[in-house]
Amino acid sequence: VRIGADYRIDRNLSAGVGAGYILLSSNTDSSDTKSTEVDINLFEFTTGCEYRFSDSLTLLISCNMLYIIADMGMKSPGMEIDLRADTLNVNFATGVSTYF
Image (cartoon, rainbow, N blue to C red):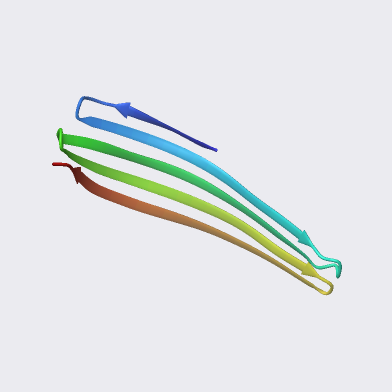
């Protein structure tokens, strides 16, 4: 699921926001009573702004945050492993575009 919006503040400046969610899930069972489970949740938030200096020169600045929750487990006779990993990634980008 993804959603976003862009708003033109004035004729030279626009700003946007977006968000997304992804769920990945997998379960495996084998005939020797082993099983594995993986659940991954991804939450994403993006924001940015664009400023037009002229018709041929634009500056873009953006920030993207991605939060990942991963649950992994494995079961077999006499053994059980459960792992949970949460990560937060923050990315900044800037650029200038021009054409001739």
